[in-house]
Image (cartoon, rainbow, N blue to C red; front, side, top):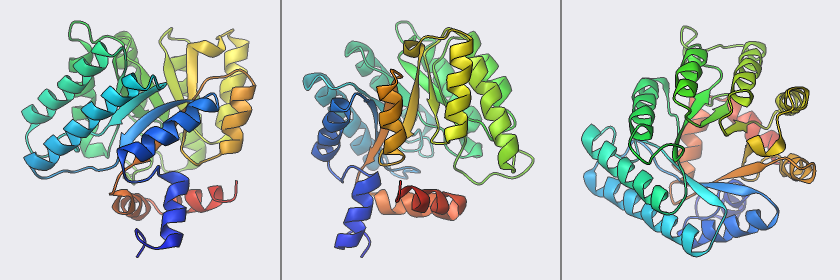
Length: 288
């Protein structure tokens, strides 16, 4: 009912660019016309069969081809469990490596999304190994979640290898021994990590819809004379479009993360079940 009803379709269209590749390519062109770049995400994770892995991989290769052919300002975001990490680690490595090589040929970029804590170290190992290959430097990046207690040391290691980072707060439910539970602690760590990124000389993404985090980033960038083209803000499709426009009008770079695919309903339900605060976040932003 959620996927087929008119209400469900209207709600999903606000946050997900349809179910087909043409849908997300059209949405990307529209977002580009507003002055924002894009990262495209084909929804789906924890794949359990080789056939499904191959299907998702082929779709990402077609996406990269279409981005290049249409001259869109967009890259792609990929989850390793969608590339077969739970099926066969070598398969996941080979497929992801193939995507990075495709991105290198097209002068593009692949972001390996971060999933729950059981995958944190494996994902970072994948990023570092792929980034270290000849010709891959600057073409593959990581995601760091500020609520994880380990994130500062992870950032230090990634920066030593000059790997591009998307910094977000984190959307999965994690235990207290692994993650900060109180928002003031998460915010404090987010700002600490943001400052490390902006002074690193590497191009990073500051992913947040929190006006306080945005204000802190702008204040620090101006105080440190960090130019607007040295980093980018990132936000989700359909969330705080007012802030997206405001930042672009102010001369700052903005990348919009656009998910698409038939699996949008299971994706949302998993996120809401894992962390009920996500539901409040979505509902609040329906009216902004």
